[in-house]
Length: 64
Image (tube, rainbow, N blue to C red):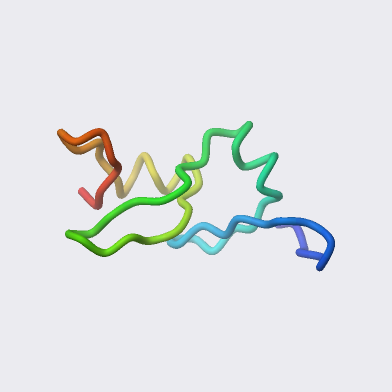
């Protein structure tokens, strides 16, 4: 796990709490946000996204 510094932007997985630089997270296929009903949540790493999320008919990711 990486350690955040103030000079960089970081993403943290809502499920496993892994932390990744935003640029690295984008390159590694992280999901930027997802929904549970109308509530928006933050990022999900690819491992957790595969386990907990599904693509909804509106094209947004949601909890499965």
